[in-house]
Length: 241
Image (cartoon, rainbow, N blue to C red):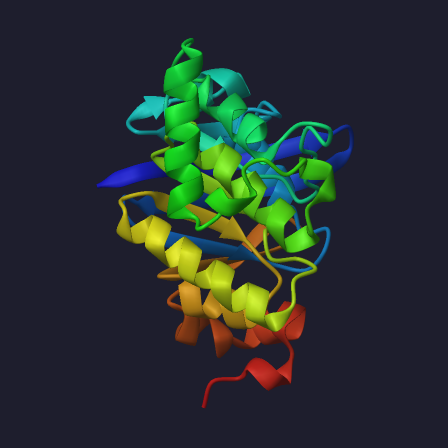
């Protein structure tokens, strides 16, 4: 079952075409990776899907509904959540408080929001830091908090925008396992990532864009051996023999 369809998506900023007739489909329960060089349009595509930017042309269909023009908070209430490259928690507030903010999407009761937030923190093995101020967290823990806050909204589709940037190898491996567990729990994942060993391990399929256009799509092994992808982005070290 398709949870997201993007049909001929175009996004123009004045005379600049950031996304050029992009098509993609995500099946429920999949992990789809989106890769490409810096400036390829990956985050712009995310922002269109998440309601930050209205598409210039094309359609975005989520759970069978056309969502062109929907606001981010309405999408969030309907099960589409996203993280951001640059994490901006409420630094002076606790980890628990930050996650509760996400919980309030679906409840106006503080005790219910707290219960939901604690459940999310437990699932991420993060409950021991619930009382720490977000501003005192390490980069790795801030990334985990960003995911926790999105999970507290109870998404059906989760968009992850470079959640592994700046992490050490051991931290990346831990986050890969967390994302796999999220998929196993029933959440569909759409992620942008530059850590290639992570996205190759996680993704059921990968879409590659360059200058806003899709240049390849397929299973990781197929994409890694595509000549156009190697020239545009991966480099020879990712050639699959």
